[in-house]
Length: 300
Ligand code: PRP
Ligand code: ZN
Image 1 (cartoon, rainbow, N blue to C red):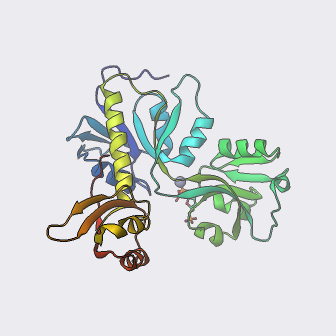
Image 2 (image 1 turned 90 degrees about the vertical axis):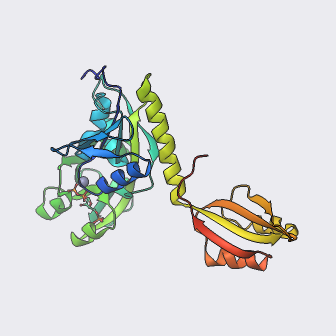
Image 3 (image 1 turned 45 degrees about the vertical axis):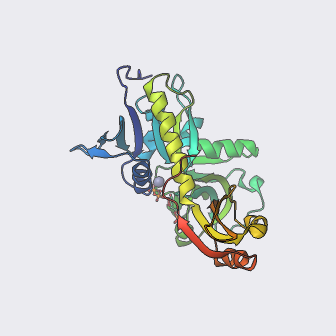
């Protein structure tokens, strides 16, 4: 086990250097108020606004960098984290999912040739399955008491059936285009994945622990904000109850008197989409002056 750098008092986050999660990760951290100066080798970014630095790496390396104590947090696909947690090296820190980011959604699925029927796991008995996720697939097969041969491939898994090196595959599916292009059909989902924040199960007992908690709270705020709207409207006090019930996932609204009017102004933060239908329903229930505004920051 690599000894964690004892002198380190700055938090270090590992994110994907390039690929589908790279931009999502950079954007999330920027929204959390972090600014970085990029080094010449573009692997390490020094945090200018807070003592939080970035390491830009291959996504497959993120769980082990955390497990070895080289990084304190990482943004990685649940698929990569789950695979490596199953195959974790003894003596390293257990790495867990701290927060799901509802981004870069995909699924790890078993896919079969289009002309093959799939009526259940038993049908896979004795077949060869190509995958880059041997631990997750192995666990699924064991759970379903199926003995199949796992053929490990680091990439281009989808062409294995065509090449005859496997009968079917277990790979990531997002739009499904890759499967269609290779005459394959998704048979069963074994893991729903999305981008997650990963970190050691135990919080570091120093400043880095505080920084980690602060950053996780900001990330929660950023996620909430994405889906939040501020709704403002005017209504007679007698209609407020009925209108309030129409607000999607609305918190307790704030009511303010309107100078020289019998009416009150209502404002509420709502989570989820606010449709024209919502607004029309509220208007019928007595609301007027309806406004829906984006929310930029939330700190509850
Ligand atoms: C994944 C997966 C498929 C493709 C599926 O590859 O291995 O090839 O995405 O996406 P689709 O359903 O939208 O077609 P990725 O892009 O991660 O590249 P890699 O396999 O080279 O890692
Ligand atoms: Zn990949």
